[in-house]
Length: 300
Image (spheres, rainbow, N blue to C red):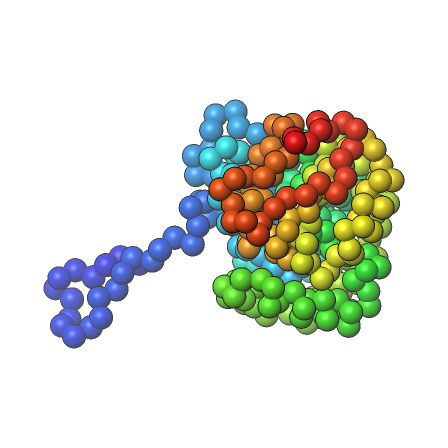
């Protein structure tokens, strides 16, 4: 919205230009008769690796922007709202995890992207796992932040209690982002998507993945098992999974701790040891829970 000229009627408040919601460019495309909203690096470096950020249950890509923006100058970054979520149009059929993975492939086909690294949060992680399972030639690396779904989040009333416990652990400004998205998503969609999410075999498919995979967990996340259980699960594979625990974080790490998460992702993408940034506050630390044999050893 433009600023009114000096000739505007006296007494009316002067309107300021609308501040862009993101430093990423906001764009639309149309795929299979559905309008799809996405954000993209406005000036990606030449020959930059493609990185897409995949949102969680009932949400849009908006809450992923703090981390995505920090990486947008190094990677050709996309943050789409998957069909049925956020500002994108809805499909006639309700999407499940395989459908969402297919929608991600369709989005990349539309953008002319052959291969990408996918960074997901919560429900976005099973979507990425299914993407890697079904389209292994289309994914370079996977970053799974606070994976959700499976037996630990069943039944629905338990998941609701976990989400209620998580809410006060997140920054208060997260509510301004999440609540409108949840309201737009609606109760019927929530019930059907929850059923699809909890029935998806995330663990089995994760252990079958053979691409470099980084899992980032929040030490205060009530939606995830304790770290020792994660270590037990991760130890079932020794080839590709690096698990990092972020002290002080809860579930929405992409929103609450973007600097720390972007730091870890950069190191992972360059096959460098994961270390703490000395500029972080004293209460924020990284701990390796598990390191596969194909990852370099940690420093000191």
